Image 1 (cartoon, rainbow, N blue to C red):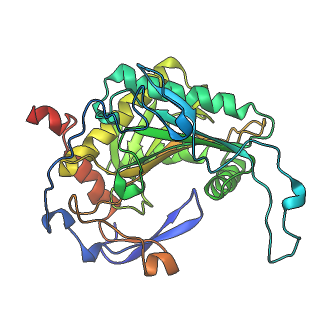
Image 2 (image 1 turned 45 degrees about the horizontal axis):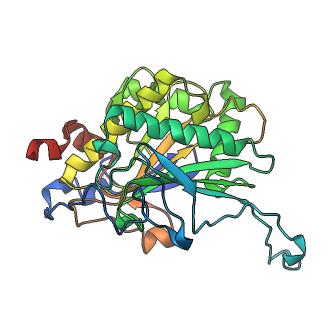
Length: 347
């Protein structure tokens, strides 16, 4: 393994990351600050996601008891018919095309104070089943080509409401990251007659140094090409294109892995760990996708403590991503974190 500056290749995107391990061989020994834990009530009368409360336009949430979903009141995509006449004039350097879609909000539970790692297992499984159901329903619409499930956790990641929730956006064209992954996975499958991520996970299990947690159906690991300090990828053990294709046993296994990852995140600095998480599902184009393996990416910004974060600025914005702490060191740090949530120890 390199101990000097080197580049690592991401076969999913075809891009590179610069790794500089000499700059921070043991970054967790640097400055470490603790901040008082955020304390949220079980129910917040001012929260527009809590049961019985008013949302935008005077719509009231029902007195829901499990997961609850609705069309985003401030949707980035709209399902209505696009007026082609409103499209700007065509020019090779000034290109714009219409885009249609749906944007849903999925509240994990009626509890304002329980994040994903703090839910009981049945509730976590219900969240995943809700993602799967909506993904399937949206993918059946004739103009939808892709469904993106994601969660922005924490104000640091731009989350506008602390009530634990996620979003589902469905759109009529493939987004950038999915287009990249479709091209690389398709090319790999044509050459090797085996999905890229199946081969990759098998190789990671041989080496073990970046594996965080695994069960019969899913593996969580820090990718060899990780960009963010404590980035994690969760991937299925079989060729599976979408959440809706999971069996009940696989839903349970995925809930276990997600709670293992997010509990270790929270325990790392004893805070509600911020991140952006999203599933990469196969295109909803009605075609078979044997090259695709369902996977999720966790992109968390924190580096050394609850207040020291990694910013993607300067060189990262203008040239390529760069990281100091190696994926192997990050994986070891996460493995050393307890799988029992720190709040339980404080209770």
